[in-house]
Length: 143
Image (cartoon, rainbow, N blue to C red; front, side):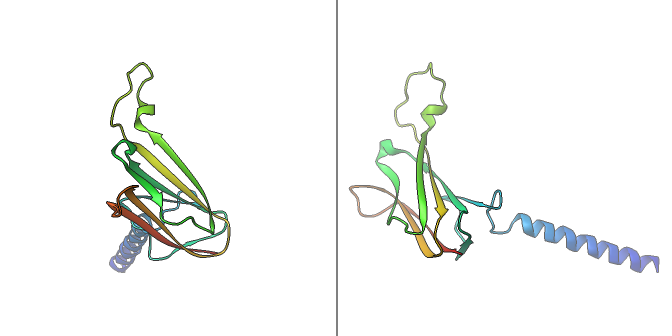
């Protein structure tokens, strides 16, 4: 009798622990229940479900001094878009001389403002070249 109880307890705890781990590794990237955060190395789910007012934040490495910059392929219609660039130079102490060829981070914030479905498509390329060296896409359904 005691063996069965212990076995059931062990199985129950194992299942609970497994579900907890599954939650930690799920594709949901919400930080606060409102913001989905991705980097260029992370793929967006096949279809990301969002509500109006929620935000998708995309963090991208960029070095404009090389000519390679991230840009939107098409301006989204269902999102308010904010684009921010922070040079790594800004992180260096003010008393140091400026450094050549210092990259930084470009942050795109897409705030859902209207219901519908849209593809967010960004490319990392030089403006004078046709072929990008990298791309990031995310199909989003807003309700």
